Amino acid sequence: MTFQPPLSDKSEQDETRELRPKFDANGLIAAIAQDAETGEILMLAWMNAEALQKTIETQRATYWSRSRDKLWVKGETSGHYQDVTDLLVDCDQDAVVLKVRQTDAACHTGRRSCFYRVIGENGELSFENTSEG
Image (cartoon, rainbow, N blue to C red):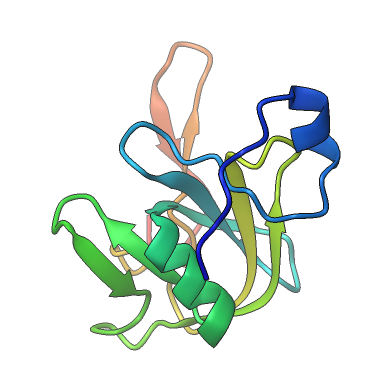
């Protein structure tokens, strides 16, 4: 599948029923993984057109690794897969949310979520009340 470019008229882009992702200058779109049952935000990653297409086709989260400059299926080395139950796109189609069934940890640190630190009033970080922190 080749994605059509975003519509030039913003109101048309916001209301179209066609998938017309708005990739950034690097050809990427933000992808937020969310636990399908609890709603917990698990991680943020990036997708290019191929990663988005593979995710749609396989229903398994596939991302673009900016550091490795290649596609990666979440869990391909760790076994911590993300099976996609729903895939949503925001109003102007420049971000996607993957509702997933997460196998074990989503974070490379071994935590359930990559969002385990809290920013305090003075900008200091503290760890959420977890057994891993």
